[in-house]
Structure formats: structure tokens, C-alpha cells
Image 1 (tube, rainbow over the protein chains, first blue to last red):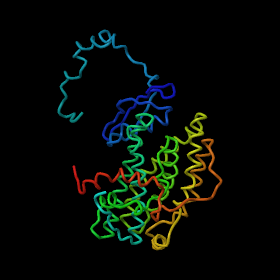
Image 2 (image 1 turned 120 degrees about the vertical axis):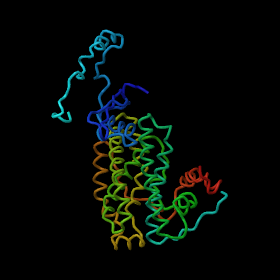
Image 3 (image 1 turned 135 degrees about the vertical axis):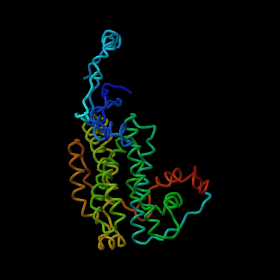
Image 4 (image 1 turned 90 degrees about the vertical axis):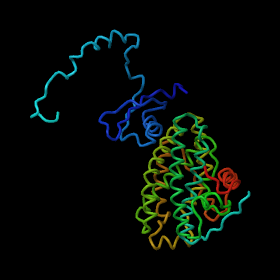
Length: 95
Length: 258
């Protein structure tokens, strides 16, 4: 239950083989230390992670879902932005 | 109770191992009683996690005790088919959960001890006990951190959380002395470097505990009187009730599996 004493925190976990921390959920905690502990107890019980970040949810600035069209639709027609039109010479090897 | 209790041949090593197994099982069961009842979801899971850590420790210790005893007992029989007077756990761990502060104080007193104890036991001459100690120490290290953070917040929190934490410290303090007591059988294991003398850990335990307690604006009692009996099977009235729930399934349907 959300109370003024237990604000919401967003939890990011870096998995064993992952390079980046990924958002995996949220939780309530009184402060950063307890949020980190709670994240460990709630989100890494099955060996999911090797590193945890917790961030106050209030610190996140989010895009407005109502502006989805303006924000993201224009990118859908720009397939040339994907680097798939180049021929890589064999000598380059693995990129 | 449909099934009679088993008999256990308590050689010093069997008795020693059973004592540690019973500590872990009973405290783990106490923590499991919070499941679905904790003040918040996050703590509900934290308490259940720690209960499962302790259950895992208990299973390994019971299996080893059964193997050393060599009388056909196994981890299930040792957990489910001994009567209350055959249990060898500390009185501290069987004390009821009470409120959240009381559970945390009990957890704090035990975890600080267990962490020091298992760390020292990693050097045991007994390879199995040393391996169990190495696994348990990582778990208890987290239990110490978890409980310590809560003691700080409860003690230095509100007037009510402070008084509840202080009441719990005052009530549970007399059960802490038993952690450091040793009888003749255990002394023989200590002399042969199979076991660790817990009395040698007491200065560090007191330093850690009083450090956190003072920082939390709480105080340890000055009374030196300590209650004992759990190690030899003389328990408080609470353990029988706990066991009647813990053992009811196997006592009613012997050998039931699912």
C-alpha cells in the first residue's frame, strides 16, 4: 500500500549475461537502502541478477502516451535508417 | 499423534549437528509464519526468503546428523518425528513472532551470532560442516544486513516503533546467553577443532549488536542473568505449539508425500 512514508521505486536489474540494467518492476520502500534490499528480495530470488539499481519513480520523466503518434509514428516509415543496405566486404570479417 | 517419536542416538557430533539444525528449522518456521501477514509485500517476501535460507541450512544439517548417527533416521524423521523434549534449539529462536519489531530483534540477535559462527566454522576440521558453514555464512551475512537496517529504522523511527523495539530487546535479551554456552560433549568437539567455541565470538557479537542498538537510539539491558535450557530439551511453552503445526501432517499421515 502506498503511504507517504513508503514512496515508489523503480527497479533495474543487470542479468548474468546482460550488459545493461533492465527495468523489471517497482516496489515500495522508505528509503534507498531499504529499496535496494527489497529489490534483492523481490526481484532476484531466482538468480536473475548480478547488479541492482533502484531509482525513485518520481525522478523519472516519462513521455505522454497521448503523444504516441507525434513521437513515434514518423520513425516507422524511415527504413533507410536501419544499416541494412550496405554490403560488407568479406575481408572485414565479423562486425 | 498417530506416530510414536523416533529415538536418536545422540553422540556428541550428532547432538552438535542437531542443535544447529534445530536452530535453523525453528527460526525458519517462525519466519514462515509471517507469510501473507507481513506489514508490506516487500517484507513478506524478504521474511519468506530468509525462512527458506534457514530451511535449506536445516535440511543439510539434519541429513548430516542422520548420516553420522547411522541408525536409519533421515532429515524428515529428525524434523517431523521428534517430540518437543528432543528438540535442541536455542530458546531464542522459538520465541513467538510478536510484532514486526520483536521478529526483527530476534532475527538481529541470532543473525549476528550465526554469521560470526558460520564464518568461524568454515575452518572446521569436519569437511561437511565446513562446507555447510561456507554456504550458510553468505545467507546469514545478508540476514545481518537486513535486520540491522530495520533495527536502525525502528529504533530511530517513531515513538511507537522505538518503544516496540526497546520492549523486544528487553524481553529477548535473557535468551542471548544460551548462544555462547557449551557443554562437555561440545567441548570435546571444540578441542578437536571440529566445532568452534562460541564464547570466543561473544566480544565481537556484543560489539556489533551494541553498535547498531546504540546508533538506533536504543539500549541493551544491563542485566546479566540469562535463561538456558533449549540445548538440553527444556523449552518454553511456545515450542510445543509450533511443533504441533510443523509436524501435524507427518504425524497424521505418516510417510505422506505429494
